[in-house]
Image (tube, rainbow, N blue to C red; front, top):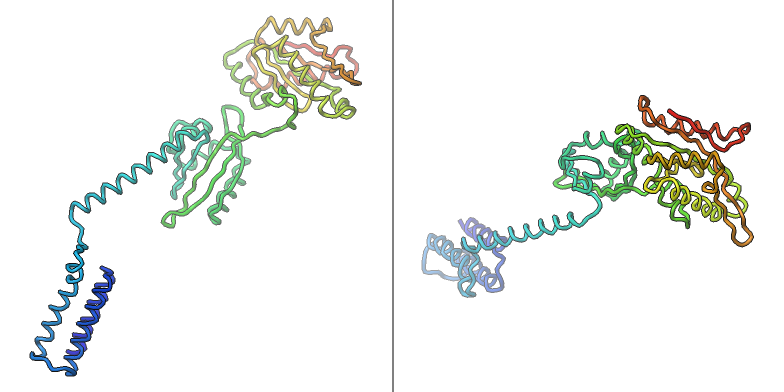
Length: 375
């Protein structure tokens, strides 16, 4: 019985301090009643009552022990319903504030965000939807992967798997289908685990993939490229719009680069392209396919007739020369011109046809620097 009572006191003291964590007053009280009942039980000091009163007294002392300290110090550790309600509303308000800040952050971001859950489901913000040409914000992984270039999938999946294992930030690029062409996308992401489930957050934006060195000539830096040309030709072909497609090769630019440096060659190309756009295109664009290979799509039939006339008459409209310091050089362009008046072939065949006409103009046995055809 002695050991039972002492063990019960020790257990209740441990439970009290694990739950309530009282201060010095409770520690002194616990020590006092423990020492007192220990002395009585071992007959060290006389006590007026029998052993049964020791047990009852231990129970009563324990009850006092649980409450006396708080009463003396004027503390009440219990939470009323009102306290709980206040705490609940505070947590709800804090959560709502965090949610509003998060949504506000999404609204000001120009880059797209993609959130992936542990089951492979994806949620895309509005900028990401526009980049990938999607309408639904919530899609599965297969739908997302169907938009990517097949050649890029193995590398991209390898990057994702490695990121899941290392839980580190990654940076990669891949192609995304846009109509009948492919656009480069840049993705910065991080994989993480929530409740042991793998998840990912990805930031996506259109990638600036420069196929040609940046120059001091702005007109060369911002020329649309072949993918843009393909999309434009497909659109015009669907509308059955008569156009003139012109392939141009500036044959002597490599020699000028070797003689004077790339800056001079770029300057001469820039002047030639600005002149061509001013006289024959106005609103339409000039596309750069290779370093010295360019292509124009002329929708204004009057401008197309003017170009053909200028070619046949060797007009000054097509001549570009720079004369500065000790440098005096001209551009020697060759042209492949195709007037498109029928639409029974694939739209991108027109581009190939224009390049074939350009190759004919480059043959040495021709006196002209152009070939004009009609399809």
